[in-house]
Amino acid sequence: MPNYAPLKKEGCVLVVVDIQEKLLPAIHDFSSVLDRSVKMVTAAKALGVPMLFTQQYTKGLGPTHAAITEALPEFAYLEKTTFNCFGASGFDEALAKLDAKTLVLIGIETHICVCQTALEALRRGYDVHVVADAVGSRTTANRGIGLDRIRQAGGVISASELTIYEWVERSDSAEFKLILPLLK
Image 1: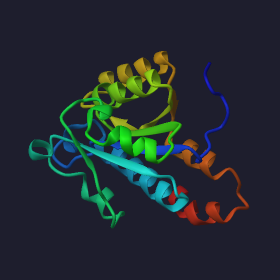
Image 2: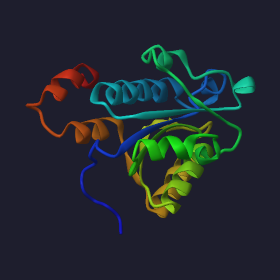
Image 3: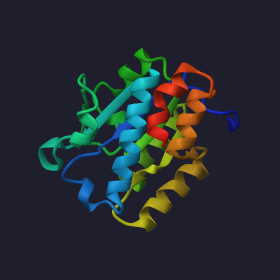
Image 4: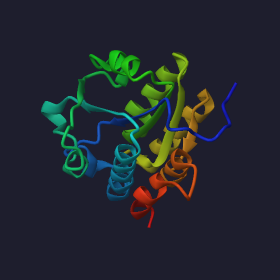
């Protein structure tokens, strides 16, 4: 049964999938994807939403983009060669430690690593939200097909501002004032 309630930050983990320097320029509208991804990471950090980062074959695709790592002095990632993040050594254990119930996914590529991670998370009983303006593929067709596949499987397709506003919940909160500069 799909969960139609607004997203709560409690129990959420932001999973940042393979936003790597050598791959990113090949992604359609990559500057927008990177901008929204940085907003999501910055908001998650400010709001105390835990994050997990993966890198696909770092030797070939390079590190996570500096725009993301510079915002996080404690940056660490899980190396993977599988497309599905659950294949990364330590990924399951990290989710268990965080008591994750909902995975909020951003990253690249939508139709490969993001999609396979979303499908596996759904199979394992997690709720999945994919932030559509913070995911990308080399072609718009593949991005759309990936999002459609995730939606058909029961994932929620969302957007960066929608997700951030749902995490914050109220305009009269200290959290809202903290993240307001991101939303202007």
